[in-house]
Length: 279
Image (cartoon, rainbow, N blue to C red; front, side, top):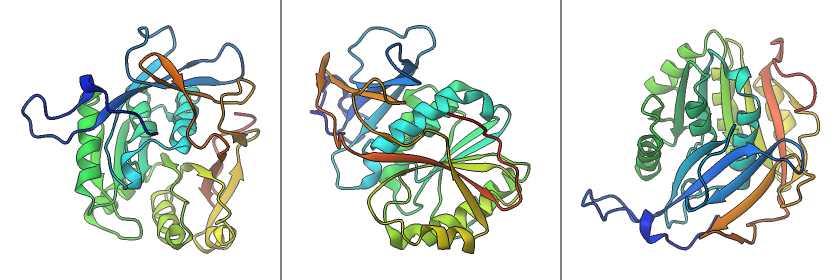
């Protein structure tokens, strides 16, 4: 999401030496005109929280890096986490390829999970630092941020695998965007789900998923699409997740308004899925 820099939200003005960027606010709440949640991305200039709303502050940075911007898949997954918070109760949650961390931060702020860990590439300190700053800005110090490179069994990865031995939920928004990275991503998912649990994975249709079924079988993973989760990311209130972008109190055109998003639940073969029925 490309926003003009908000002078109130620029970093570095306090003398801490942090990068310049802009903060926006994602509001997850009731959508009275349609189904599911309403998701509003704004700049914090709107009204205060209403009943049942969850507000998450996110900082985006001017960069070509995929991990420093909000993507449509993250908005849909955060909305899904909000609607199904009860399924996280007393379970560890790990977000892979967290980027700016929206779904994981939503899980942390809801407070139902036993623990929340946000991860991104171990060699991308800029993204990891931005995640730590977002945890502090949202008053979510219990959310951990660790470097985790897909396909590598690092000490951090081994620790997360042990923490998921009794089951848990892996969050992944738009991690399946480039075919060359599918194998490493799915190897990490299979390691985390070895003791049970499931991965909530939102992908954007880009015509690059031809090898996905084969790789899922390779790593012993089964998948199903959550009923009625296929949607067009749009301002149409009849869709399951309504998304609005607000800047300075004025609604802006949607980025990628025709993005086709799908929510998949991945489990290891033989594990009983925890989600049933329509979302």
